[in-house]
Length: 392
Image (tube, rainbow, N blue to C red; front, side):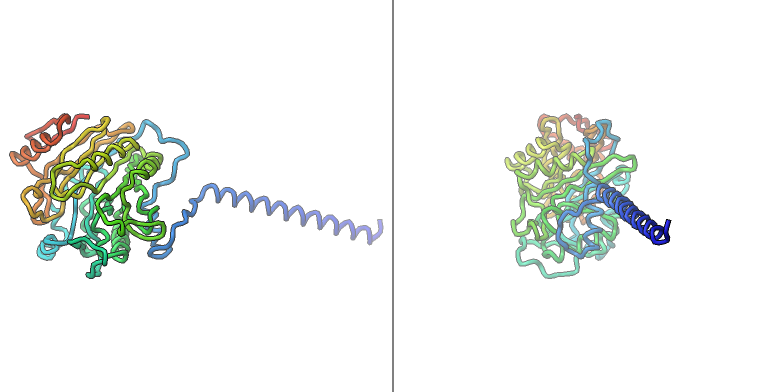
């Protein structure tokens, strides 16, 4: 074999080896990209609000933990959830905090929070520095100082509902600062966001045993100008057409689904037909529990197809203007096996910005009122503990 032929053969072998290496490397890279694509989260197309880092942090807290490919097991782990009423750090509560400190409102209620794995409340008004209300505002504008967030977390609160008629009192800047403040203290939020998708997105919280509860919130009593749009920040307005889709998504991602609805008429203990219509839509969509806010007084409880609807808890941290508003309830929920198995009602006295669990005759009075306002609901009342269990 001549040297020329040998050189030619070597070049051919080199070319074949090079081609083999190129195809081999391409195949490996392709496999890596395929695995990465299949296992990584997908970009959801949301626009930036407080910058890319803030958006990523917000979504890490508020976004569901990942859409399951199949329904979650019916043998769902047990979970305990406590739900409290309306919270504000404005109005007369601001004076109380200035005098007594930001932790003062929680001193008597925090031991009760400790009995539950997850605690959620509704916060009326942003936590922001800006003292100039938005141009589209309610007759009363509420806001609190950012320093009020840490005591909430220290008291045991995990999630803050923002779908109400006051969270936008200081505009989109107030909402943005609130989201950042809550996030910094490890408080999850839901019901408002950088756009409609974020505002309506269910918040999924997971207990240590793996049990997941999805929380959905809507507001039915705010100006449409305060509702989130496709590309604008705001709250989740209540749409009967979208309730089914939103709750359905929550059901797929969690073992249990709770809806917090901002509805009804301020100061009225009467349940409106609109409230009942919304409650029925939530139950039909698959909610395991529906809890109401906004009236600032206690309203009755109804069972719709076996699902409890608590039309109004009343206040939690507030300074009520009437004696009626000083009575409130805290609800302790026990879930197991895919559904709600227990509901405990704890009567509260709310005055001077501080909720206090009631006992004795005063507790019985609140429970008797609630029982009268809830025809057809079976109450197992305990005068000794000052609480009542709803028989489901």
